[in-house]
Image (cartoon, rainbow, N blue to C red):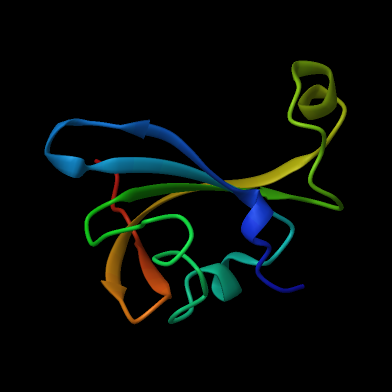
Length: 99
C-alpha cells in the first residue's frame, strides 16, 4: 500500500509547538518508517522534528474511526515514533524506545 494523507490526524498540540499525531494504515511498519514516507507531513500536516506520531496498523482495512468501527476491526500493531528529519514537504519518523 502507499501513504494515505487522510490517515494522519493531529490529536494534540502542546506548549513549545510539540504536536502529537495518530496515523492509521494497513501498511507494514517497515514501510511507514522509511525515509520521507509522510510525503506531505510538513506541507499539509505541519510536522516538525520532535513531534510524536502513534501509528496504528490495521490488518485488512482502516476502520471507521468510531468505537463500533474500531471494535469490529483487527489492530495488528501499535507503534510510537517521533519525527527525526524533514525535507521540503516530507517527514521521516523513527521508533521511540519505551522504557
